[in-house]
Length: 587
Image (cartoon, rainbow, N blue to C red; front, side, top):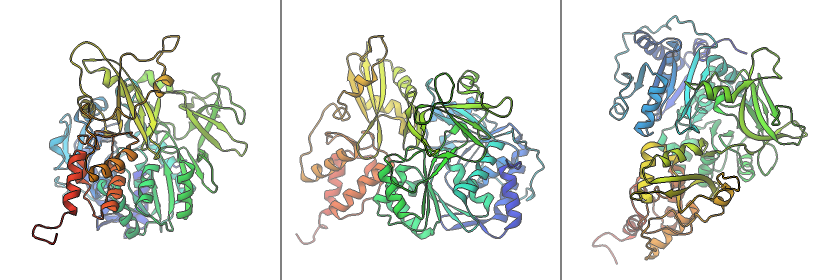
């Protein structure tokens, strides 16, 4: 297990290859020497603001060279960082900042007005840093010191912060350097948002290896055509993405290349694995919860399987499939997956109860005091020594790689005045997408519309946690022992419940064309001309697939923004206008 922290590993690499390109973004580059110097200057400024070991700095910046400078600057100051997505609801950001007790908020001038003002603010793109020392500050950082805090969905209705120490992060990078591996000649194209922990592989592994990382903007990452264009132009040799993003690239027409394909965040379906294996130089399926530092297992995919297995543990990681008595399950028998070793996080911020529940003593560990993390994943060992994923032991789901506790959405619904009962279930829409369905029971008082409930949820939750469909019920079905009957709920038809109350069928050929594309993409039986694609549960990657189909049908290239604020009726009219000849032109 490496003893150096990630910023120390980077500094050592910068000393070896100072003139090599470290990071690129939209035509601008930073060499290892320049990135080292700029992050040192920021670190000195942060030190004077009180940043040091165990002090948290929130980072809310757009994807840019400044983002990488910010990450390394915080770590070099001895601090730990909390990545924030500027697009999250203000209330959720405020909760994270307060719960984490952040000392400094590191952001950009353009984002500052939209962020909660609960910490001292430093705008990295406006701060005068040129007078600061270009040498690294002297700060002693231990392996047990906090490296980062990252929030995931919480079953109590509030997100929970996972505390990852330096030792765990350094071990992860060393393990990934071995398998799947990265070389100094590699060029990694980074597409993942900073608030998703798997971005740690994309940003740090190249920088401690001597390779190059190229960032793409959030807009490019969500647009299949633009992402494909950037992928081809970059000549990247390694790309990590979720299954949803890989499908986006395939639908945009990616023909393949000499690329090491890394896929994780949710189960890798067999059909997608086949497509990626045929197009890439190699395919790796990666698995791991946030609580055990990004990825804990890897599997080189070499043959067709219905669902790709979890694989085998990475270096210095132990995995156990245990029954309800905490005893090892025999090969082929299902049990819960427990993970131990160097990657296990400290626990949850300010949640000793939940930490004790999920991080348990390790009865099989060789060293005293070791802990195991209870993943909640139902798995089994195969005869060939590989672990298969079978499902969940609780109500946690994955949507586009993001982990969601359904209870958090249910709790937010129950917080609305007229809602007395709520349940949320996942549903496969048949196109490789998992969508959420909310079942709601009203009590006394004025009943909100679906549009109003959706708007309230968008004000409080990230977009990927807002249900696509809403079903209004008189009562929630119960089992004979009085518990919620989720199987009975799943049998109810939610496919026609997503639209507005005043349903109006498409009337023109263009409206019918667009409606057909929308219903297929969203997994709905019908849509109204008054419906908005995003209000029906659409999201950025899915919108790009929809636009690509509309583009092909009408022979016009549409701007992604043209779908955002329009009803089906307005969007269809805009498409008609695009097809109409110019005024005064030939009929």
